[in-house]
Image (cartoon, rainbow, N blue to C red; front, top):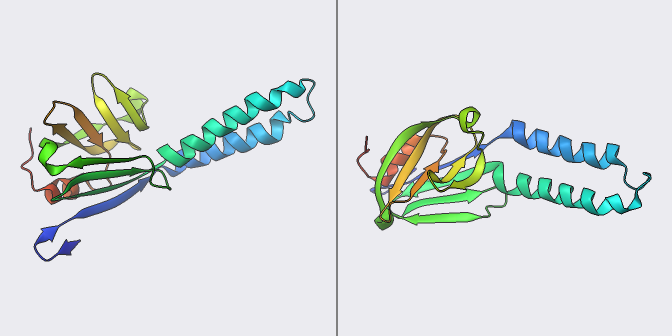
Length: 158
């Protein structure tokens, strides 16, 4: 999207297979677990806890909306846009496009590791990797990482 002389990228990525699996898993637990008819009436608490975890996973880690431009990078997680992460342009030292594989790392959604930093990844393929002024790295699986990088106005590192 172009507004005057300012270029801004905005894109959404949704991992529909994971959405389907999480919803099917929750429905399966609710229908086939049948805690109300089981021999252990105390099982409804743990079942509700697991269903709550599945709901949180669906609402926070199944889709991303990414916006990049002169203000920096904004990442909204899930269909409700929460949690939200904002990286000001002044804090970004370098940005580059890197390959990511959720099959190799088994990490999808919103995750953090001491070695790799924050990652917002829903699918394998190219992603935008930011290096911040404090040395931390952020990996964002944008729908079009090349357009996201171009809208930042940084020269690609690497």
